Amino acid sequence: MRRALGLLAFLSLVLAATSPARAGVDVRVDIPAQRMKVTTTDGEVYNWTISSGRKGFRSPNGVYRPTRLEKNWYSRKYGGAMPYSVFFRGGYAIHGTTAVGALGRPASHGCIRLHPANAAKLFALVKKHGAGQTRIALNGAAPDGLSQFAKAPGRAKSLQAQAGAKQRAAVVAETRAGKNWNAARGQILLRPSLPAGAYGYQPYYPSGSPVYQGLAPGWR
Image 1 (cartoon, one colour):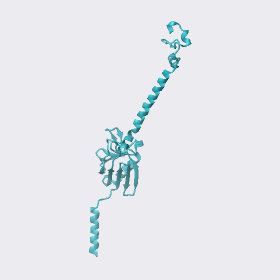
Image 2: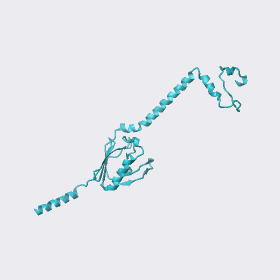
Image 3: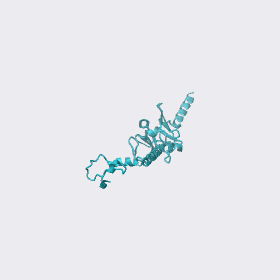
Image 4: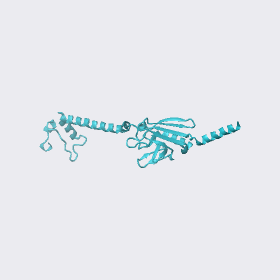
């Protein structure tokens, strides 16, 4: 009996030593859904909205460990702040962003963006449990439509500006074609803000106006 109990205890130790250790922090990034789920061995669970790499800058799928932590980082390549960066592959990192309005759609150069408050929380969890006990998994690809949508506001703004310019041009053309255009032009060129005796002041009067008829030939 004692030998059997001893054998069971030995087998338990062997299984514990050979079985893979559960990560203290498990980070799962669902790129098609633009979501991140974080769980810890302490029982904490978080679900956050992200921005992954936009079209032409895909975020790399795979399973990783953090390579380094940078609380205050600035990308000289792309010219942007990356607070609470958790680097996991070369220059790729999970980090906070000031472009919180773009969260929920692909908008980055390949990194995984989070709201700064959520990035700070993840940074603290990784620091607490250690990089060796943190697992980061990225899976899937965002549809191209989502990446295009990230650029839609700029295109929409450009189209709106073009439409506004056409509308203003149409108003000007209509005004010039109207019967009151010459009179309006004359009123503009009168420049009443200048005194009549100002040097070089040459008022303009439409040929059909009563004032024109009373002017000396040199003033016409």
